[in-house]
Each structure stands twice: as structure tokens, then as C-alpha cells.
Length: 474
Image: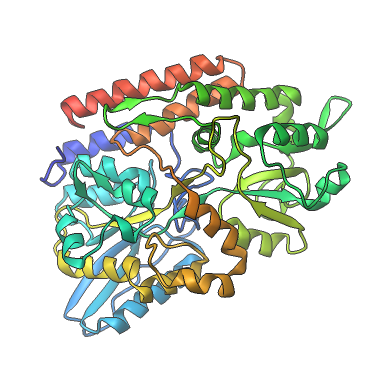
């Protein structure tokens, strides 16, 4: 069971070592909302280490209570978050918010764990969805079950996959902040037309996607000039495997028996398909040469027409508006996998927020969590500022979104049908690393897809068994 005691320094050192060993970047997004990240964070605006120091935001003067909040948003998102802190202080004139930036993803959370081990944790911390079970198992999060019951909040108030991320061993350990619909299928209409395809008709099945991809690919003298889609780059190899595995009808975890199922036959089919697309353009070396001249921002290959199809999160809408405002594109559901795979298969990522074990201001901290994540005032403000979809399904923001943010409607449609979330178990960070290593090995031709996913399954199962039998200090 999760350890109710604060983390010891010995436990912290073991945490850092085990997380570093996974080789992961983040939970599913770069720095801001999480859900999925180019590295891997979970929300939507994305948490990655911010390149410049973010000064602490001090609480308003004269407050009887000050709660310290650690958050992962950097860059231009800092000022947006300042608006949230100020709005809460206006709503609660006795409470002040001291906001402290802290890197927070599957590989970088030393600041928080060091503080917990020292007995000086913040009162609130962002936690990526896949981290919740692991942090609970480590004893790093306070049990919020009673707070949810007192507030009358239940599963019915939240998007189901997001709720499941926070529910572990019969208790609730965090509250969902963002629910990212992973992912929207984007297509470049100009490239479709140039390739002789109907620019208004995206592929609706994997077979059609494969055919479109072949028609769009352009290779001259052995060199790639244009690609249809690069499916293994859906925010990293691990996120790609989850995404396409579920599209093909696969599963990755059996919670009733704590069994890892990365080598499910449908996941193998998905990885074989990805390898087929690699081989079609001449292998990884050729793809690497093609991609060498591209990057992010205005040089993103999709933005400049060098790729025609991609699975993107909603945070890319602001990037397109900024870097490719004239881009003609469409957004729809991902193509359906081979029968009997369900159509419109998708999953939910996103940031959650918890109260660290040992927090001194636990009741004021819960009031802040509840205001930000489960009231109209907090969720509407957040939705407007970040163009995001709250985890709180009952938010009035969803009634306002079609008029205020019409570009987000396709993602709301996807969110309504999303059924999956990454496995809720304490070896999730390790699982991401195992998938990353083994999927890359398959795409490089070093392992067969079957062997790669069998290895990822065995490695993660052994780690999960070890944690469940002996804990993180065993």
C-alpha cells in the first residue's frame, strides 16, 4: 500500500536513480499544460525545462494564509499563470499564492522530492497523469478521497479516462486539471491537392492512410523530398506506440491482474505497420537525412508542406497560428484500425494537481485545487487563457467553447469519445522508457516488432512485480 510517511533521503536517492534509468523525457507534453509532450508531459501546453529562470511569484501582501504552489509552466505561460494566481486571491482575500516554478515530468522532479524528504514540501504540486499512481505508491501524495466526498465530486463530474488516472488502490490522489484529447488527425490540404488527392477528404481507415501515404511520398534519386506521415514521431516513440496500438485495437495493461500486455497482437500489428512505412522510404538513415533540415516553429515539416499528415495535440493550434497562419489544414478523428478495432479510438492525457505528503496547509490547498479544477470560475478562466479542455466535464466552459474557441471543437468531439489513458500502475515511468528503447530498436531494424514488444513487456513486468512485492526501497 502507499506509504503514508514522508519520503526519506534514501528513498529520494532511489527515486532519482530509478527515474533517470528510464531515459524518459516527460509525461506527455513540453512545459505548460500536460497530456502529451514532444518529450512526453501530459497536458496541452506542455512541460519541459524552461530555458531561463522563472522568478517566484510572491503572495499578495497581508494574507493570513499563504500556500506554496509548484507548477511546471515556463516561457510565455508564466504570465498567464500569474492571472490565475491573482484571480484566486481575489476570490479568497484571506489566502495568498506563492508560486514556484519547478521542472515536473517523468524524469525531472527532484525539487519536489527533495522538499518532501526534507519535511518542507509545497502545499500544491502539478503531477502528470501517469505519475499519480507511482507518486501515491511512493508516499509522495496526500489522500484526497475525503475531500472529494465532502465536495460531492464523483467520477460523473470528470472525463472518465482522466478520473481513472487519479484513482489508485481505492483512493483518489489528485484532481484532473486538463484533459487532452490525444490526438487530432491533421492533414495539409495543399499537399493533398498536389499529390492528386481530394483536399477535403482525409483517410478514414489505416488502409486508406497507407495508400495516401504512398501517394504523397516523394523520393528523388534515393533521397526523400516529402513524406505522407511519420507515425513514430507522435510525441516520442512511447506515446506513438500507445496511440497507434490503441488505434489498431491493442491493449497495454490488465489492471485486475497487474499484467503488462505491450506485446498484444494488435500492438505488434501497429508496430509492424510503422516499420513498413520506415522501409517504404528507405529506412531510418534516409528519414534522418530528410529530417535534418527541419525543426520546430516555422521550420516544422508539417507547417512547410514536407509532411502531409500528423497526429497533433490541441496546443499545436497556437503554433500554427503563430508560425504558419496561411496553412490550409483540416482536423478530424484518427483513421480507424483494422477490424475489429473500434473507430475513433483515442486516449486522454493531461496535467493533474495534488497535495504533497506532509503539506502544512492542506485544507487551503484543497480549496485552491477545487476552485481551479472543479468550479466554473476556475475552469473557464483556464480554458480561455490556455485554449485547453478542463478535466471537469461539467464545466460551463464547454458551453462557451464553440463560440469563443471554435478551432477547438474537433478536439472536444475527440475528447467525448476517448476511452483510454496510460496504464495506472507504479511502474509507468519505467514502462515509457522500455517502450521508447524497444520501439526504436524495432524501427531501426535491430529487433523484430514482436521481439521488441515482448522485451518491453518482460522488462516492465519484472519492474512492476519488484515494486509491488518490495516497494521502491526494496
